[in-house]
Image (cartoon, rainbow, N blue to C red; front, side, top):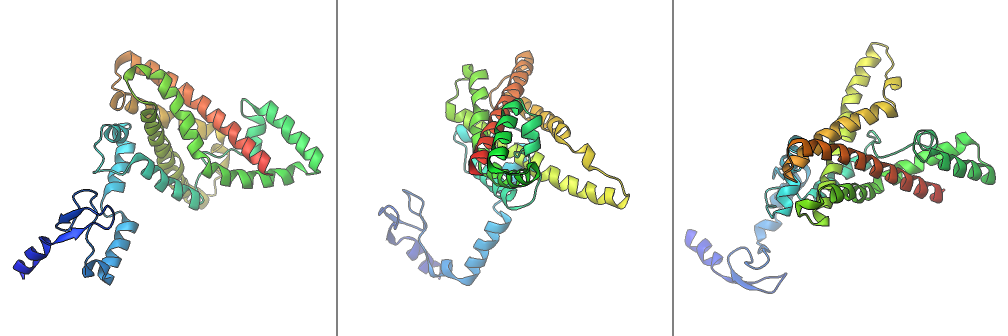
Length: 288
């Protein structure tokens, strides 16, 4: 049997993907595998399902852990060409964004109509547009608010990629002397968005669900403490942690310059988030 296996491994194959002639189980040009009857067995089918659902290759958990514990590491590995041991930052981002899109989690990247109208730097302009539309269309404020909030929730989950691009711009300016390509800064911005989805949307939502259960048992209210101001404080603290880690690991920045650039980065992220919220408002406004 061993001799038969060895003879089979030495057979020549024509690659189905690139037409390369090779011996063995894998094409030496593109890596395509030669399909055998066992690859189409029901057992193999179940193994593939298990791999997909549980991420048993460990890349997902390993990559996510690096994003949380060592910000900037995954992006550095990716741009320097060490990629086979981790998920690509964009792949990891899309997995978490899918979870964020499908389940009722904390709407970190969403902004309600009330917040847009009264708590943002562009609120005066937003109030003018909304009031004009309510008068022109004959809506009540309550009715329009319900329609707006429902629509903007869906759009916010689709437009996160806009925030990624906007967030990369401050990195490009602040660290312009670090010999990075524009796409390198975008890679780090993808990791930043992944970090926020993991920590400030998914993990924080799970924590709040547990706290809500405990508070409900003791008949205490929690909603008044979890407003936009509280979420902003959490957002600032977690992103300061990310910016410090990414500054050291991804850009190799240290000392007082790192502190100064973290402050500038936080300001840049604030401006990027405000620009994103304005774009989100316009998309929602135009779609109603």
